[in-house]
Length: 297
Image (cartoon, rainbow, N blue to C red; front, side, top):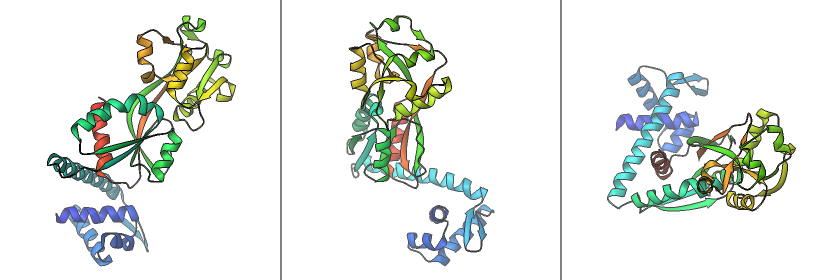
């Protein structure tokens, strides 16, 4: 336990890079913080911080220790939660937020399995687009996000979850669908359905189109819709095409209501990412991420 507390002191100093602030957060004196750090450095026979006057920064060894300390703390949190849950002493609420594609096609079976195993945990799900989910996380309206897209917010930690492919799909009766393949330039003439601004899917599509020399502005956008289901139903009743997650059209592909149309030279792959705030250390989000990754294998 002495080593554990020294590790906690070290981790707090590493995050704050300030002995005084770390002491206040841990409710111990600054000399006590200094003592614990010195003892840990002696124990490991290495310097963990470089000191330059009143400023400090982590050494290479310190960076390694931060990484492993966070893994150790995560193990402790999960042990405590799972054992307490086993004895029915701990529940709690997990406020989950997800972008529309993930919420509709990825999460439902995972949530059902999670509830079956951890039925004392109450889960609430907020469904918004990627941009709105990131904002909700920063506003602390949710504890954990699941998003699509390339957004990189410095306040947010992104954790890869599940690989996805975005494909161009058309109603099976669409004459262009019969060919099964089109040239990239043909995209400029086809009436397309696109997601709304702020959508992670739209962001990924825009990024990928650059590789074939096309911008979103070059496309013949018939309509922008705020959800995958509305896009899919519109496409099935029109001669439009739509870029959609492969996960969202599996049933329609099997029933031959629609088909994939390959675009020469274009592949659109992405990952769904879990998102948490940097410095956030809570058992339920960590437990849910661990469970979801195992369930999705």
